[in-house]
Image (cartoon, rainbow, N blue to C red; front, top):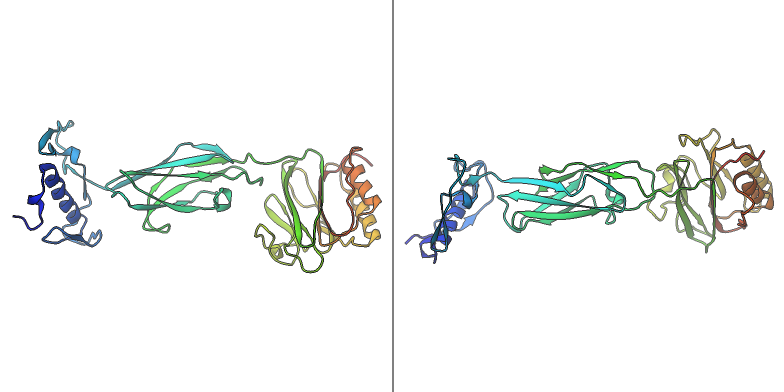
Length: 365
């Protein structure tokens, strides 16, 4: 009686599979004890290691089914090494082009990978964690019956990013492990961009330490504001981004979305901050950004009005606030006359109110 217990198994099928399992373990370089116990991991340094370490039992000319025999015709003639095969991995997405807000599903197919094996994926395209609803750029999944799946859902982020890509790498051991398969490229269209045709006014009365934010596109240029007002120490920082680039921010710390406003090249201080952009390429006009400490200072409101009047026709103007502000009737009229129309009814109050404006200079002289 064999010490490995194979001879005691109840069917010829069980004995055949047990013998193949022991042979597979040896071909992987693992240690097989006399009683059939397998220990260790794959070891190519063993002299009995073979690269074709896994088997496809259907390639055997004789395969048992219980105690009966299944005759395999083995079409294609003699295949050297049959039934031994190499381990393999492949990964395929169910789409090659998607929009923001869509979901793409990846199917991983393996040969010679044991059920229950954990594999890992990383996204090495131009998309990053924040582009997805779960904010992840890596993860794991489990192989069952030779396959596994996972899905990625894109976020409608309202940022101007252009077309991005997802490229998935399948890895073993960890998210930093060796790459065993690479997916085809999935392109992601930038479809979640809101548009302002001519002008937009945004104002909200807030308690100290809170904030107002928006993302808007005008003339193809993406503008992102986060503006805070407070009485004392702010809870959040303020900033302005143009096409994803931080152009102005206060020096207090982190905005609610995690942006470090202290890294901005221009410092926002109390009052209104104005940026003026070339409408064709989003480039900052000379002399901007500018900050106007309008809180209790009507003269600076007048200066601000005159600067708005001097903006070239079709140039883009964006205005954000930090801390406290004032807004005179002259300044409100300038916003209406040079950027708006007669239907404008917002008042832009003074003191601690977050205010945002985005518009294009009209033809009013």
